[in-house]
Image 1 (tube, rainbow, N blue to C red):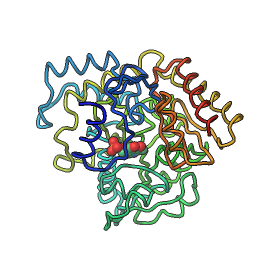
Image 2 (image 1 turned 90 degrees about the vertical axis):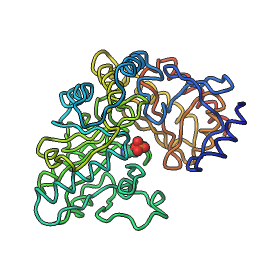
Image 3 (image 1 turned 90 degrees about the horizontal axis):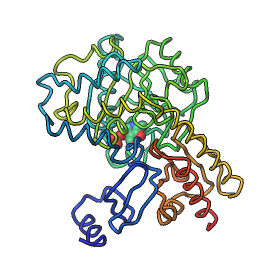
Image 4 (image 1 turned 45 degrees about the horizontal axis):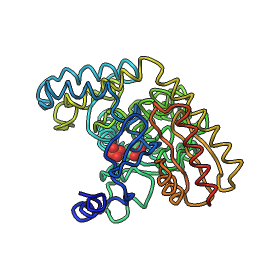
Length: 396
Ligand SMILES: Cc1ncc(COP(=O)(O)O)c(C=O)c1O
């Protein structure tokens, strides 16, 4: 099929849930992808912060191939060796004592909500089931996750929404404290808001939420679906602030493209889930676990994270130079290789023009260009991205 025929067939046969760019990506290697007409792109989106080790990372590919030839799926009726190995790696390198595996970010959030409610009912006394979440947050599209999400546009049309969620402004400790009641069981927050526009909290914010949860006996739940697995230059973003949660969700980069999610918790919290409370047919299957183990090993050994931090710093200093040259740039902000560039105008047009010039990025929150490139980007890649953006902005 030609590219036009493919796009036409996609529009004919698929649900119309996505507004897609008119290209078909067919191949990827490292920080580059190619479309069906052979055009090459520098990929500063990485499948929306998923392929953090780059496309087709040889070690991840080998791990998936070897596991596919050995055992792909058996169900959680049996013990699964790679699942145990990945859980051990995650536990040994985080605050958590236990891991539950699922298949996506929304599912991990769904698990966290169920866990917090059960903990509230069983361990806190009274009717503690409410979760305080943040305005402009994003937690996924299942009914509970979209209700936890602090953006009305994602909820419209799906009412009645499940009850038990409150929203307060992000980065506002007083508002969070004022929202706590005798119904609250936990506080859910992204350490850095991703879809909400790459918003980084004040240095006191996460520490303050930790103290509030400690004082009031609440669970602190970090949604690290986007920020986790090295994206911010730390294995988990909360390490940057020296604050640990009680519960954490992961997905996106955990499988570097293989769909994986995980729910992590401290022992006394995880222990409220007993057989029959939560499950997933595919969750923790050997194939996905092989991908996750390879990802964890790469992030842990070697200089992946220092390189991520160094490239992030170089990239942001390049973007700062664009701020001086182009009046539409309001602010550049980020951590590691998670960067946002807030504009005074809508960003969609720049995204399309950058794509035409061979750079893939996206725009979130209407006017924030989001850059989440793979950690394998080189200095040349970073400089090339800045050069392309400079050209695109110069045309405005
Ligand atoms: C912070 C955060 N939580 C949850 C999700 C939902 O993940 P998924 O799309 O895998 O369900 C996302 C997706 O963008 C996210 O950024």
